[in-house]
Length: 281
Image 1 (cartoon, rainbow, N blue to C red):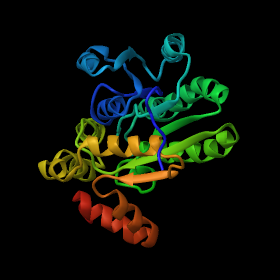
Image 2: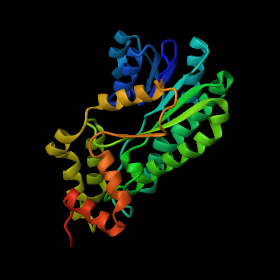
Image 3: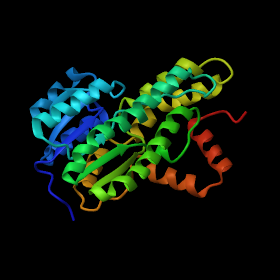
Image 4: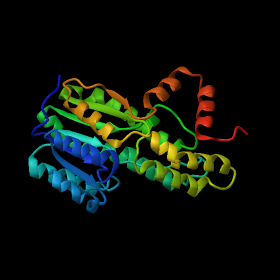
């Protein structure tokens, strides 16, 4: 069973490319009034043709988030759907990654989503309805080499989502986690650049170069799923009367989570080393 989305107001962050852009288009096609938020508003100009309303928003800037939410409320009086999609992958050996970069990763991937949720919740509680969709990753359930800080943010967002789901249930609000696998987007290239910047030389160079090459390989891009697959899943979730709490979707998501859950830790470690081409010694 599904509920109609016509007339619903949706805010999608990180909407200038990839999953965010595809989701904005998918929800607009479903009849939502969609506000597409990102730092680079000029990259969203083409979305206006689809009836989408681009707004500037930096999820590490509290004033920016407040202004964005206030504009939507002033325009429409409500926010029915929040898609916390803004995020990026910062890879590198734990020892190599500067703490400022680690903190920034949390600011974008965790604290930005949490703060925006705080700003939106009073308006959802007022209508006793709403859907909060947090885009984590299969990386919120598994671990990969040199991804300590990235995985830490995604594990954290998974935990926040579970606790929030309990808190807001009395107000008729659903919290939904989307766990993408490999997706064709800018993400892999950014993660590869990050690991090369900090771990392509020194003690972790063999691992760093192997992981960077794996992330940026043509075969990795070919196997990856299109962002539209995730967008369709988000539409399915926000239109369902009783959505699942989690949707693992996209290349590798379900099998990798399954292997992580059933294999001993050291066996899964070996699988990850082989998958990324890391030398055994």
